Amino acid sequence: MIERPSVPREHGAWGMLLVPFGTALGVAGAFDLKTALLLASTLFFYVARASWLKQQWSWTALLLAASLAAALPLFVVWKLWWLVAFSGVAAVLAAQPTRRHLLMQLTATVGLVLTAPAAWYTATGRLDATAFWLWLWNGLYFVGGLLYVRMRLAPVTARCGLRWLVLGFFAGLSLFVLALVMANVFSYHLLLAFAPAVTRAAAGVGRLAWPLRIKVLGWSEVAFSVLFGVLLVAALR
Image (cartoon, rainbow, N blue to C red; front, side, top):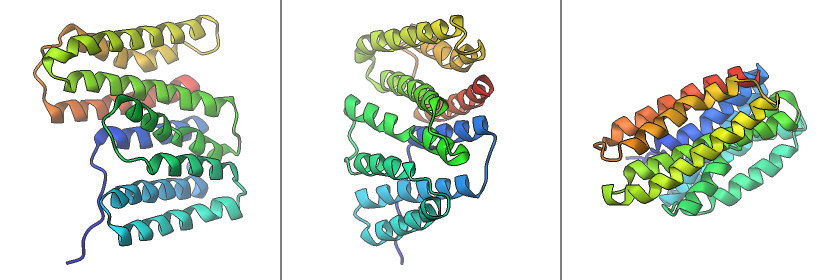
């Protein structure tokens, strides 16, 4: 029997990979052959990493070859050479083994959401301020989500300490976004994009003894991520 390639099962990681990609395309208002090839290349590479971690060398080589084949037209035909830099960062991060250490998870999060500026650049041909803001807002959202999930997954006795980290992060995020809205850098819609996540965090911090249901937590985070993506597109268009 031919062994199947390993596929990452973490709902959160898939959200960090695909929601930023989708927000960039939503703001750009474009989904064409270029962005489809980038998406295919990204997915092949992401699954290849899972095969590499499981030492499935044949699948790793095949998936990496497919990723490269999908990406080549982006360089050769459309001259999107900045994607080489994005690919380099992705390769460095993918080479790191999966760890539960907070710093490593934060680094991985920041790296995964690079799909936002990469997709924006591919769709528009520009690596500009919008690319930066797409990366920043997606990064802040998913970093906050990571901290919240770590708090919920921690033993009840350890959640109190993590509570202050979650509270501090979301309070700082809310003030930062509010300041930019008050300065007319962004519309109030940006506040609405983060409102569900801030409300969820406040509720979670207020009731640390909630029973933990892993599947409910995972799928609710997927729903919150998709909602954030839709609201962010509305805020930035």
